[in-house]
Image (cartoon, rainbow, N blue to C red; front, side):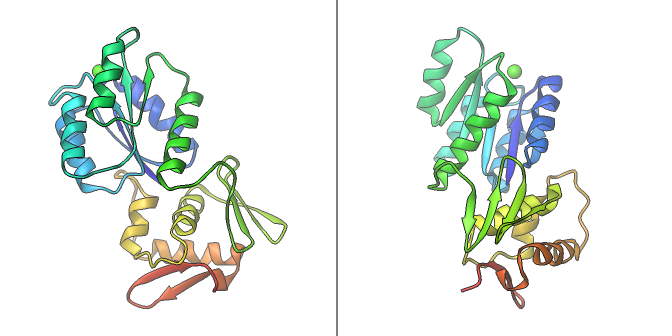
Length: 219
Ligand code: CA
């Protein structure tokens, strides 16, 4: 899953990015409202963390612009402590949740996870498809009772596949879920990781559709 962190306080932005990367998200970051709007229009984020006071364009205007275009990505706004009207304005502009600064990273990550699950119509608990169970907390996969550890990229790739079970995901689409803008990409990297995942979850669980991409689920 891929998230966007919009925060002009560089130290807070890097703390957020670090914490989210450790939780298994691919993370893009920016401190400017105008570039945030462009990123949000361009990439399929699973969630956005949006500060309101930003250079370039205010966070509320960025959010309104996204919603006007029909972009329904879950957004958590970061508000200044005691500024209750910011919360109201944030919800009016289309925010899904808010956190007042300062906040605990753990709370932010928990709320973001809940928001993403809700937007995908899921409830709490491991992601399970046909005997394959992915634990998003520990980033381990259990296949017929055997636990396998996953690297960060393997975890993000498997999560994207499992969330889209039965649907064909192109290599490009998978890359968007797995990498952030800073990551180095190679042309056959996805293939290499697919092979590693097949060794863990079973070859039949990830099918290749030639010229189209990959589908999760045996059927
Ligand atoms: Ca700010």
